[in-house]
Image 1: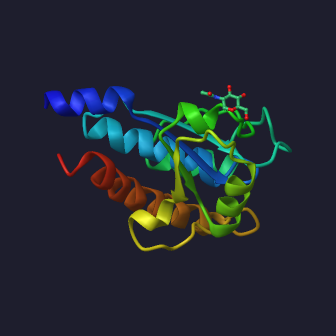
Image 2: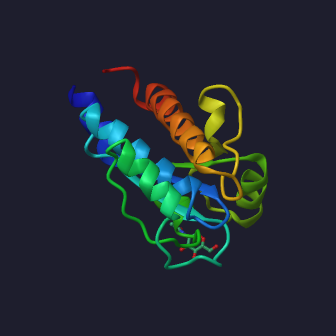
Length: 162
Ligand SMILES: *[C@@H]1O[C@H](CO)[C@@H](O)[C@H](O)[C@H]1NC(C)=O
């Protein structure tokens, strides 16, 4: 127990799941934080950002918000672009798909200390597809993926202590 407390106090996580930070990544942030809280891991810091700035300051997509509400997941986020300090401030940077992963590798500073990987690498190596141009069922699918990936990620980095 004590060992976990120490670990989690220093564990800072970030998700940068999509380019605009309004659909997939705020959903991932909300779901991962909720799953961590339900495991009693209250010291984990979860944030999300985009690789691009074109939605900066915007709230998450209405469909992301309604999907989270449907599953009683608290969500509140203002879109932002990733910044250099994120690469040293956070321990893990999780990308939604290969394209975002490539963008992260391209912008990461030399002194980056974060582990940068595809979120799916903790489970099945599958990308989280962008639901933006589809219907509500796409958002539900993203939610289900985020839920499974949150469990896989927390099992991987803090151990299965449910
Ligand atoms: C990392 O490098 C950037 C410049 O690329 C610098 O602004 C930043 O202060 C450095 N961070 C740390 C923690 O040394």
